Length: 322
Image (cartoon, rainbow, N blue to C red):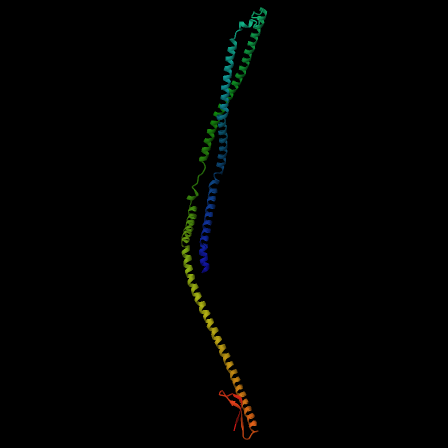
C-alpha cells in the first residue's frame, strides 16, 4: 500500500499519461509530414519551373529598378549639363564675335601718342588673331560637347527602349508565373483530414484522463493514507499482543524455573536439617556420655555439665547437685 501511495504522489499515473500524449503528438507530427510530402510530390516539377521564373523576374526587376533609379537619371542629368555647357559656349562665341578692336589700343600708354600706322596694323592684326583663336576654341569645345550630347541622347534612347522591353518581358514572365502557379495543387489542410481527426480524438481522450487523474491525485493519496493508518494501527496492536504473550510465556517459564529451584533448595534444606538434627543428637549423646563418666567418679555429688536449651540445643555449664 505504501508503494501505491508513493506511486500516486510521485505522479506515476500522470507520467504514463503524459508519455502517451507525447507519443500521440509525435504520431500527429509524422502523419502531417507524410501528408505534406504526398501532397507536394506532384507539384515538384511546377515548383521548379516557377522558381526559375521567379529568378528571372527578380533579375528583370532589378535591371528595371537600376535603370530607372540610376542609369536614366544619370544620363538625363548629363544631357542637361551638356546642354547648359553648349549654350554657354554659344553665348561666349557670340560675345567674342561681337568684340571690336578698341581705338585706345593704337595709343601709347606712356606718351599718349598714336602708334605709327605699321604698329597700329600689327596691334590690330594681333587682336584679330586672338579673337579668331578664341572663336575657334569655343567652336571646338562646343563641338565636343555636342558629340557628348549626341552620344548621351542615344544612350538615353537605348536605355529607355531597353527599359520598356524589360517591363514588357517582366509583365510576360509574371503572367507565365501566375498561370503556372494556378496549376499547383493546393490540398486541404492536414487538420481537416480523417487521419488527423482520429489521432486528435485519441489525444483528447488521453488529455481528459490526465485532467481527471490530476484532480483526484491528492484525494486518492489521502484515502490510501487513511487505509494505511488503519492497517498500521492493527499491526501495532498485533505486535503488542504478541509481545505481551512472549512476556507472559517468559514469566511462566521463570516461575517454573523458580519452582524447580525451590524444590531443589527445599530438598537440600531438608537434607541439611536432617544432618543438623543428627549432629545435635550426636552432640547430646556425647554430652550425656561425658556427664555419666564425670558423675561416675563421684558418689555423693552429681555434676551438670550441659544445659538443654529451649530450641533443643545444649549449652556448656558446670553445676553441682546433691
